[in-house]
Length: 179
Image 1: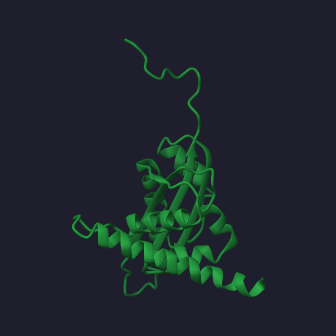
Image 2: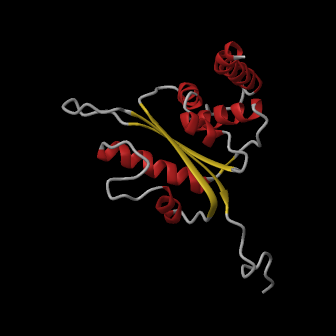
């Protein structure tokens, strides 16, 4: 049993690669090319497909929160879920007006390729748990390449993914209010 368990990450990567290659072949005529953040979302959804989890839909508010965090980490040279002032995902989601019932975040730095980022996250129990959480429905992602100043060594490649489920609308909010 232990021997078959060690092959699981490799099998998952092979399946992910096959899915991505076949998806690229089917959509090869669709311009423009996907951004690194879009490729990251596609890779995450490919893993969720293999693992029989609901696929995630891209949310522009989550994309904005992810972009803000990637840019902040690059500009201020830190790597963490909270900024130097102690603000985290909750504050970032409040700024973009995304009310959530559940919100999770994975970050990475240094990797040049979104598939490598996802493979690395799958090797970490906490990150993998976030990616495969069956309760989340929305996703936002950001990739930032920060060209370094020759005098400053920077990590250069910043990745942020936010996975969430929106809070249910309150009964006071009219769904289709008549005027």
